[in-house]
Image (cartoon, rainbow, N blue to C red; front, side, top):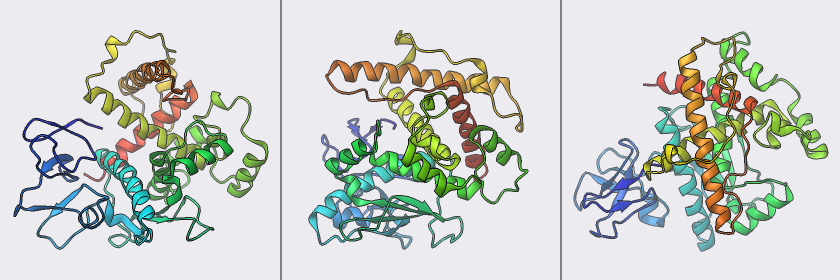
Length: 353
C-alpha cells in the first residue's frame, strides 16, 4: 500500500475518511488510485455505504447516476444491517475487500460486476453462518462468498487452530478466492494445448485430477511431510486449483507488502540479514512460454527483495514478543510458480489497457 498525503501535507492512510490536521473529509479515488479531499458542493461524494453505514471511504462522482464505489458495486449480498454487530463486522470485511480491489486494479485488471458482464463479471456474497449455517467461503462462477463471521477475531483464530493454519486473515480469504476467479476468467476457456494451459500444468499439475476426492484425502491424511519443498502452504498441496489460488494469494501479498515497505522508506540495501539465495532457475518460466533471461533476473531480484524485507519484519515482530509476521518459506519450486503468476498477471493486466 502506498503512502498518501492530504493537500495540507498530512499523512493519510488507505482507510482514512478525514484528515486529522486540516479536518477536511477525504476519500479514495479508485480511478486515480489516490486519496483526495471531498469539497462541499464539489464533483465528488462519498460512496453511499460510507454515508449510510460508515463502512466505506471510497468516492464516486456526484453526477453519473452511481451512488456506490467500484468496490461496493461488486456486492451481490450483504449482511442484515439491522444488527449492529453485523455492521461492525461488515465494515472489517469491506476494508479487506477494498485492499484486494486496489491491488487488482493496480495490476491493470478491469473488474466488471455481474450486472455489467454476466460471464466474466465478479460479485461478492457476504453471508453470516448465524443466518445461514450452510454458508462456506468459496468461489463459483465469478461469485466469491465469504462468511461474515471470519471478521470476528476469536472465530477466525479458533478455525485457524482447528485447521492447523499458520496464517488466516480476512484479506487472505479475499486474495485466495480471487485466485479462483482469475483462473476461471482467464484460463478455463483456453484450449488444452494453449501455452498458458501447458505452463500451468508444468508448474501446478493436472487440474483435471478429481477435486472432491483430492480435498477429502487432504482433510483425512494432511499434506505430505515434505510439502514445503513445493508448496507455499499445506493446503496448496491438496489440488492444483488450490495450489494456484494459494500461490496467487501469496503473490498479491508480496506486491502489497513490498509497496508498503518501500513507500515507508524501508530500503533493502540497508538490511544485511543473511537470507537464502534462490538459484537462477527459480526465476525461469516454463518452456512453453517465451524466455527472457533479463525478465527472469528482474523477477528474482524482486522476490529476493521481499525475502529480505520479510525476514526483517519477522525479527522485529519477535523482538516485541509476538509471533512471526510472515510464517512462510519460499522454496525454489514455489518461486517458479510465483514467476508464472507474475508473468500471467502482467499479460492479463496489459491486455485490458
